[in-house]
Length: 289
Image 1 (spheres, rainbow, N blue to C red):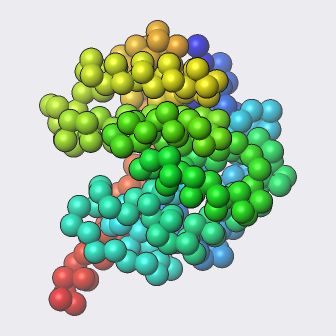
Image 2 (tube, one colour):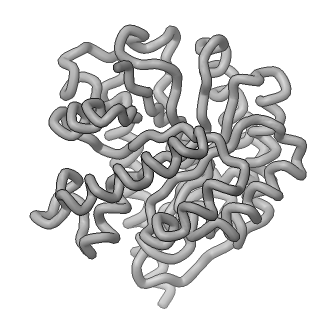
């Protein structure tokens, strides 16, 4: 079974190990914004995202390319140049993330939806995923905004919240074509823990049972089903044995498959620079106080 590739802005010039990966299962929009350190409402950021999507869609012109709308935490969004909407939150992993932020910041949502729609006009292989969705009603609102922009391509959603898991039957009736389970967040919220803790166990029988239930429901509706996150080899093998495809980060290729990649430190660098900006923004805010 070939799995799917996740990109975070890596500047690839050809298909990445096509014998291993079948199509681009996810481009994480927030890493394009964080790389540029700009909010999507800025024209220069919109052009940057558009150019990147055009390039990837051209390289994979005969395969699907799934773009995930920006999944920024409040802390990450606050330090981007051009951000106008600031939310005061004590816990950045909760609150205004993903689709919640898109709906709360219509200027940002409209700008990103416009870019996706514009790229889609010349690249019909482009599809869109909504992240951090509460439930079917919220997903419907997001889909309506994107469709009003003129986007007629496929739409998918992440399942990262327990509320979305419990509302899956209704979510599958919204006209989506793909479900992607975000294993990092869903595991965190199920066990009330953070990544890399002793309780964050994606292979726990509880998680595996949830995945089988979701897979069965998606299969009955003929909707594509995959899992994503920072996955290890053991988990990937277990998923593939269950006929579940994994969306694997470009940065993990060397560790998981022992295959060389051209941009091994791209994601690490963006995260490091972003953390510096967040600390600087936090320190400035404290000085103002």
